[in-house]
Length: 210
Image 1 (cartoon, rainbow, N blue to C red):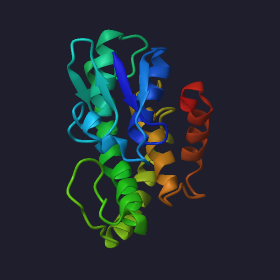
Image 2: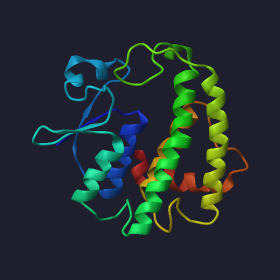
Image 3: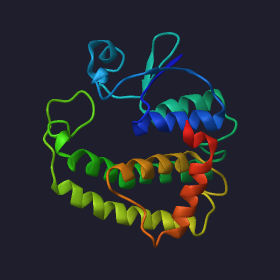
């Protein structure tokens, strides 16, 4: 198997952190996003959407989307479990992961893609026609972000990890989201001390450097 990767993009990093937590080693091939390699004919033949990550299996099938890739490895190597062990924990982790993606990560993408003039024509990642930025989405992102971090603060005030008593894929997703959002100018406010402490704990784990 081969994992098509990029060192600074958030979605490939989510896979790397997950694999590090599972102690799984896999061959990685770096795609240079700054040079537009994700839109080269060679890479589009692997993933026509023109985004990373992508997992090339030994039989030639390609799995795209970071969550799908992690789910694949979870099925191959269930221990340690990061997607839950029973119906309730599985549902809880899934619910929080989706909420983090739809509220927090979406806000970060809105801010990152629409708040930088150099993104003009590239408001959508991957193999799309030229797409104009929408500056008003930056304001929407700020509103979404404030609500998102307050929700995480409330949850972490009653639970040591986002989806329960142990680290899960939801925590990995939140770490990647918060770090990516900072690059877009969205940060954790001084009032969210519980969330800040959680972030420091997550950032100190060896997997966070993957």
